[in-house]
Amino acid sequence: MSVKPTVLKLGGSVITNKEKTLTPRLPTIERLAKEISRANISPLILVHGGGSFGHPLAKRYRIKDGFNGKVSQLLGFAKTHEAMVALNKLVVDALIKEKIPAVAVSPSSFIMTKSERIHSFPFEPLTKLLQLGFVPVLFGDAVFDLDKGFTILSGDQLIAYLAIHYKAERIIVGVDVDGLFTGDPKANKEAKLLNHVTLKKLETLMQQIGEAKVTDVTGGMLRKIQEMIPAVEKGVNVLVVNAAESKNLYKALKGERVVGTVISRS
Ligand code: IP8
Image (cartoon, rainbow, N blue to C red; front, side, top):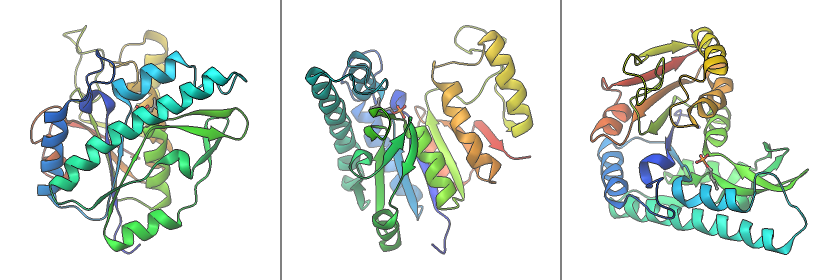
């Protein structure tokens, strides 16, 4: 690909109400679609998280643990994937309404993991889509696993993998907080937003988090950021931005100044 793509993740906590199972935040999805349309970035790869669609079902049926041999769990896998497809449809519908040529790309239909890590990823269809000018919309999904039968593939693992393969210009991660903090901003008023974090600083932070569990704001932030490290090591900059706030995503996509955290190699 001649032009390096932007890889954008819309966090599940932004596009769904995490407190209520299977509850989308439709006005937010529509607003984000408008912001993406206005920014007019190409090539663009979009990935969204599971929020209250994927996670409660995945948890209830222990999909991440792998297949336990019971038919009831197969149904659980089917329901988890179905919920993600339903959320994906809401996102794709909103994008198409804003005249973005968005195409749903379902990870479980072509990606295989091995012990929860991406093992095979046939890139041809996705590359063709991007070359033609489409915006592929992938998502964290229940996928088939060589060792465990099946598992959950997070959108975060996906974006890092995609960014490395396509030598992405940057990764933008839209979450529901202002970025990475020195502590939990919701619990600790002293917590400070980190505007720029190098890999070295990130390692130190990880150790602190490991010991004191201070910055794991959403419960998933630490895991999300850890997944970004291989991409950052390869020189891809990551911008974590609050996509729950109007115009932030637009500004991030346009490269304008925006409150958030940049993670870079040095
Ligand atoms: O929200 C998980 O994706 P994530 C998707 O990006 C499912 O971690 C199915 C729980």
